[in-house]
Length: 68
Image 1 (cartoon, rainbow, N blue to C red):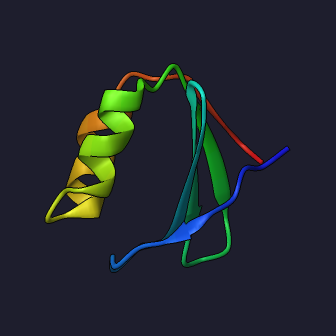
Image 2: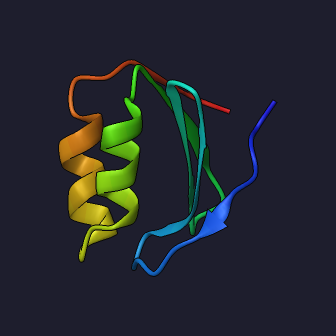
């Protein structure tokens, strides 16, 4: 089940949600992906970043993911 999504200001990302260790990212093209093994600290860093897109790339690099 996809958690509550929060709108973000980004050129490519529409909204982000978080559920314990899983990060959900909805892109503006309509695709949603879940990234596994994302810590709460990483989620907070993402949501407070000046550049959501850049932070997303750093935080999710090497993490397993799938399209929802």
